[in-house]
Length: 143
Image (cartoon, rainbow, N blue to C red):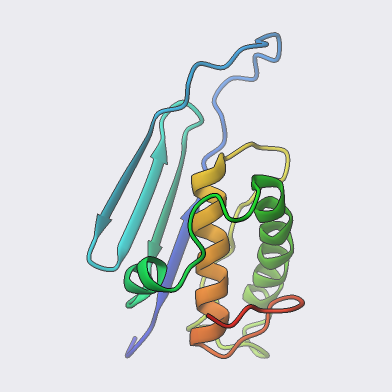
């Protein structure tokens, strides 16, 4: 695939459904960044996020709002809308470029992924829309 760009966001389901726990241990995240790949893993919740896109790291460092600018609930609400439209486009390859929308994103609104995951997904969606001239939902900040 010539000049194809990838976003791979995988959220693995939790093993075991023990709902009687009222306390979750502190979440330890490992964040790895190599060139244009960002990987976030949380072993306690058993999910992994991998973002691969040329230029995203430099855009994130230079143009994204700093962490803490938006609340987690703001990011979660925006991500739900963006992911819903993203997944609709994946299912319509005859209408939308299948090289841009290669795979669906499993984003469960009932799961607390934490601030960092929501921050990176939100900023990737802004980066994606500005870089590839796409409009997933509503107003897209130009940064």
